[in-house]
Each structure stands twice: as C-alpha cells, then as structure tokens.
Length: 207
Image (tube, rainbow, N blue to C red):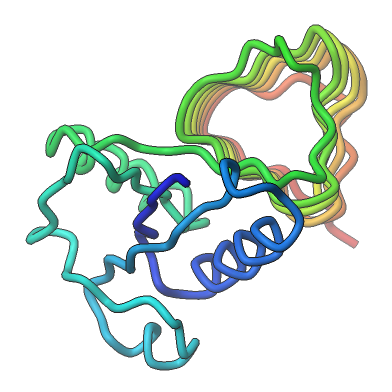
C-alpha cells in the first residue's frame, strides 16, 4: 500500500481524495493508497471538506518522510509551479496518481508527479512529462508530446500535437492535429485551437 500526503486541501484536494477512495474500492490490496494527511496553509478548506485524514502542517513546516509521496492537488498553474519547486528543495518525493479507469499503454513514456483522473485516455506513442494534472475525460492522442506542469480540464489534444510547459487548458478545450503550443499559455474553455501558439498567450473567443 502506497502512503501519500495531499498538498492542497481545497477543491482539487477534495476531488483527488474522492477519486483515491473510489480507486481503493476497486483495486487489490497492493494497489491501494493510504492518505496520511494534508498540507495546507489554512485550516479553512480542510474543515470545509470534512476530510477523514488530519491536517498535518503548513507548507513551510513540512518535513518529508522516505516512505511517503506528496500529491500536489492545486489547479492554478503558477501556484503549482512554486509548490513543485518548494517540494523539490525539500527533497520530497512528488508522487503520481493514475485512476484505475485510465486507459494508457503499459510501456508509455510518462514522467513523475502526474495526476490523472478517471476515464482519461493516453494513447500509444504519446509522451508525457512531469507534474501534469488531467481531470476526468481528458485525452492525449497518438504521437503527442506534452511537457511539464500542464493542466487539462476535461480537455484533449489530437494526434502529433506538441505542448510545452505550464499551460492551462480550460474546460472542453481541444487542439487539432499537428499544432505546436509553447509555454505559459491559457487556452480558455471551449476553444478549438487550430493555429500554433508561442508563449505567454491567452486564447479565447470573443462574440
């Protein structure tokens, strides 16, 4: 059984907790996950979501244990980036969670620290980097290359798309085949991206 600490006791932490509990109800003992507790700078969210596991400490006071992994349950890209850097400085082990319902090839090239919610699909010959967060029903198609710390909210990219780092894909946004996306971009909800995007752009539709 893997032991994890969830960094972030807000809405993302609540969703992650729910999916871990669902995962545990459907897998064998060796694949179950124990939530040891939560790290957050505020008790407000922890109280709001009525978690079973305790609030352990704030971020600055966290001291890693060798037998525990940290799951980063924060959706805001810039905050996630800072938290990743903080955990790495502390030599914490940033873990991954992939729900049992996710479809992906066994030998897929995928990095560390990825969180992937139910019913997502990662196709053969796709490459996924580190610290990405995919909510339910996301898809990464064949021959795609995805960098680090990207957030996909019920979003998907078609074949041979290349994505850099620190990009936010809003709800139901999609990318057509062969598009190249740089770094630090925001793709707003519902967008169908059919052109390359460089860096530090916001893509939205104006009525």
